[in-house]
Image 1 (tube, rainbow, N blue to C red):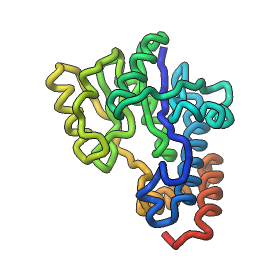
Image 2: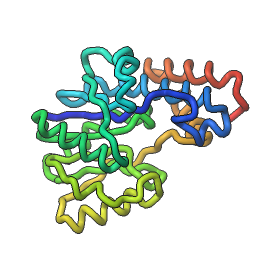
Image 3: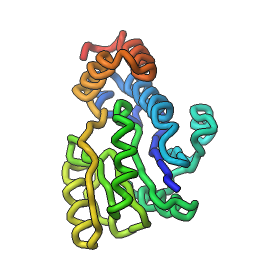
Image 4: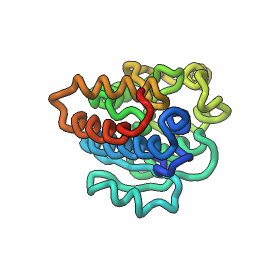
Length: 224
């Protein structure tokens, strides 16, 4: 069974998108984050055979339940650093019957769905698949078996995450492949790029909806 997991954090001002908030305001940045979560849940709801929204903090289960339909189920994130939380997701996924599992974040709402399907396909012949992000991290990681060592002692939230992970894969003897590079929405320049991409994607209903929501949020903010 193919399982897709998505990490998402509750949209409380001052706790999400703080780099973006430094330019458009923390409240507006939290509203942007909320829309990215909503759009990602909608766009990726048909990928894989099972989908899990892995949310934080655990006490916001009711808020997240209001954002999903029966195409997603909810699982709270565990405690610990990002590596511990990722490792816990993969333990959960494989104990739930996954033969291949992917994990993404909610910061890439325009990510082509074909990249996710490609990642599942790459796991047929590889132990690990990574989706490189332009900032030096990764927007996606997939495994076909749990591997705790892959997530220990990584310099999370730095531009070294991808390179360190690839080195760890080599050390562990894991067959590794990569999906195409994409970008996360973390700051003002990223949001401006996303809006431009959405404006060009006239055929996609999700893109039009997200573009409208974001421009409404940004109407009273400093220009991008």
